[in-house]
Length: 216
Image 1 (cartoon, rainbow, N blue to C red):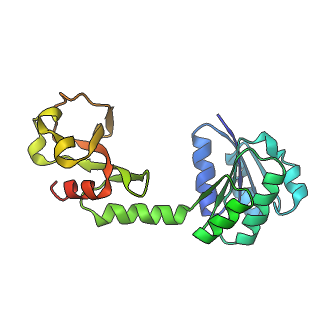
Image 2 (cartoon, one colour):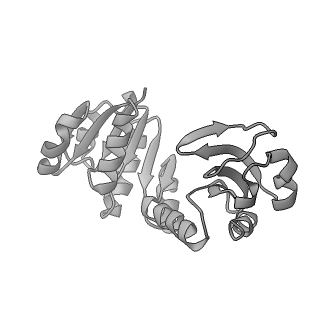
Image 3 (tube, rainbow, N blue to C red):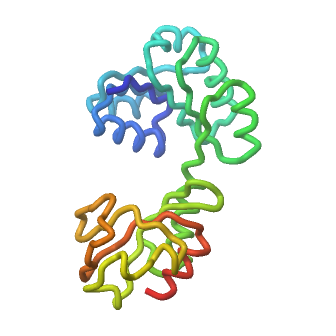
């Protein structure tokens, strides 16, 4: 369990806070909008109304007691910069700040942000990958070249075992799990016999995975 501070309760901050709370973390939220805090206060460990660009407001929170501080402000980049800098001045352990462009990322990293995220861009890229290629159900990018994909098996694989099909050699992807009706089998045996409705979780180059999905 981690102690988490979320600054800014817009769409991103709201969803992030709720998910962190669901995962069993202690979450404190803060926003200068009194109506937003009143709406969500009862859902979280603690809440406060305040403008985090004011150093005294952040000092009152005991910043060094939080494992992670999220700066989830989307519209006011100047505020994000100021708050990120203040958090680092107050010895925040780990600061994650939302950005919208590479230029914003460079500036945020320069003033001390430990991590910069692009939620809108990442979501858009994930959707583009899913709908650009045939039969991709989920996708996680690891590097610009390699990713993890959830894809259906080919119909002709049903009833055959994994090792006999020579998937790694033939298609240049590695199977790391098999999923059937939301039941996941991690690290499947080479002797696993494919069943109808199986999905495979594979890691490989995007170009190789796309070639495979075009055949399913």
